[in-house]
Amino acid sequence: MECLDSGAIQVLLGVVLGGFITAGSTLFFELYKDARESRRLARALRGEIKALQTIIKKRQYIDLLRNIVATISSTQKPINIVIRVRRDYFKVYEANVERIGMLKNPLPEQIAAFYVKGNSIVEDLNALDDGLWHDKPAEYQIKFYSNLLDLFEETMRDADMIIETVDKKYS
Image (cartoon, rainbow, N blue to C red; front, side):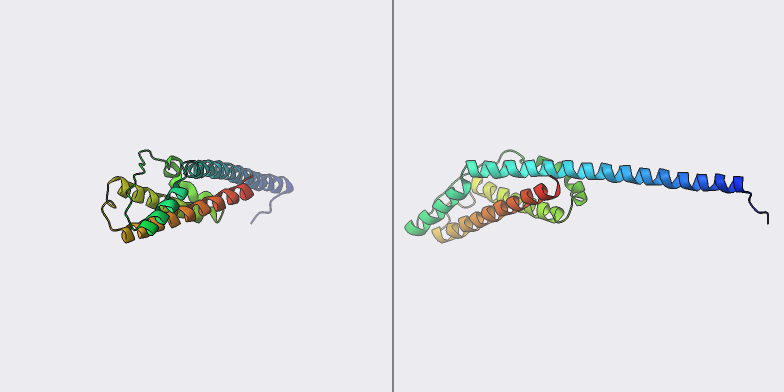
């Protein structure tokens, strides 16, 4: 076997070193790109969640449900309400659901739970709009409205937690 002379060793080392530099810079730029995309996604979801939270507060849905539960409880007379949901308020989430795994923990789990609860609220509001709770006895309505109120309150707390987490991890 022949020995490599110093010139051949230098060429070989140059090739190996060049390969490491190329691979390292490619990896660095991919990680930078992923971090930038993760930040953009987190901020977009934060914006959507904050907007939903603002709508719920401005329209006073939680106060309305509290008042309905209190009124039905005191009068034992059913109350039929309709809150229509005609728009798709989850567009950012739905367009990016496959990408939420790229977010920093615990955001993927928090965001998925928030939107599952949000969809459940929409289903309940659609049931009200469809009249499925009209003509139900007061005790059934109290239970339904109380559960819906609890779900709204829990989802609003989840929204606060997500916003706080995004602000900490992506500011």
